[in-house]
Length: 216
Image 1: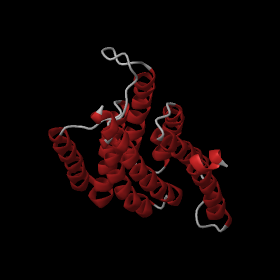
Image 2: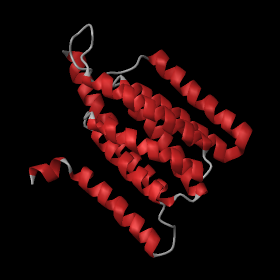
Image 3: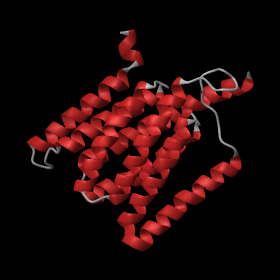
């Protein structure tokens, strides 16, 4: 019972994805795309593990984002293809960063915060990406490029275990709700709801750890 209480989301959400995919297929609302299903399942497990600071989440993310490249090519979301490629590189960097001790402290990296100026820079970059997308591709482009920018920023910060990564992810999740509704990717749409829950919960979890470490 203790295992179930501590890992209920690792059981509930993947099971929910399987059930939802089956329901969408059975009711003819949406076809079952093997690439989408495999990638979505893998990346949800990845995010849930990363919230717990488990390096195995980086491995799941590596596999899932490789599959995502082929899926996003199918549905013509160029920004998401680029995002998946960056994710793969950052997953690899994250594996090394999370497993190897810091050269100065000789300790494994733990959650911390960015400075205020870094946060302003991140907001500016994400906003610029959305404006560029709007000018070049309209509303879909604005959402696609904003999600791409916040995703790359989030994964970059996650490599260094910055708590701000989860805030960046959550902002992208909100844009993803609209993007995948418009594109008709209902399984991905459901994934955004799971992401939004997980990334919000992860932010508060890591913030608590960050504050405790700061006081030491």
